[in-house]
Image 1: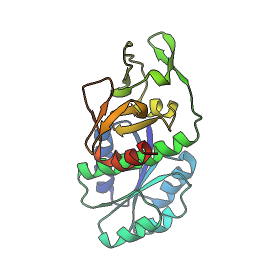
Image 2: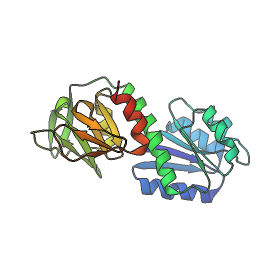
Image 3: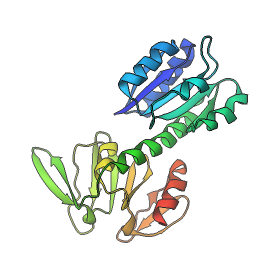
Image 4: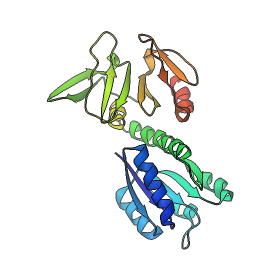
Length: 231
C-alpha cells in the first residue's frame, strides 16, 4: 500500500485528490487542511508521497517542502503557475496546476512511484531466489527463470519460459521490492520485465525472447527504463 499525505487549505481540492487516489488504487491517503497538522503526520508516518499545495493562508508549500524528511516524493498542487520553477528547485517530482484532471494526476503518481521504488530497491541486496506464498504453500522461485510479471488486482502472474505460470498473492510493489534492481525493470503500472529476456524494444512496447505478446512501456517509465536497460 502506497502511503500518501495531502495538505491543502481548500477542502474541495482535498476531496478531488481523495477521489483520484481511490480511482488509482492501492493508496492509503491522509488529508489535512492544516499545514501544521499535516507536517506532524508526515514526520510520524514517513509517507511515500506528499501532495502539497503551495499558497496557503498560513504557510508556503515550497518552504514546507524544504523541511520534509529525505526520500519523500513531493508533488505540488497549486492554482498559481508561477511557482513551477520554485517547485523543481526543491526536487519536486511533479507540479500539478489546478484544476487537476485525472490523467495528469495519474501521470504524476506514476512518476512519484518510480522514485519510491528506486529508493526501496537500493536497500535490497541482489537475490538469486525469492520466496512466495502460493495458496497454503511456500515456494522458492529462482529469479533467473522469471521472464516477466503481470499485475492482477491483489495477485501477480509470474511468467517463466517453459515452466508453469505462478499466481502468488502479492502486490506489484512488494514483488518489485524482492527482485534484484539491476536485473528487473518496471515498465508499466502492471508489468515488470527481466532485462535479460528482452530481444528488442521501442518507446511503446517491449518484446521478449520467448513470447510473442509485446509488453507495454508506459510513458512515465520510458526514461528510467531506457537508462537502466542500457547500463
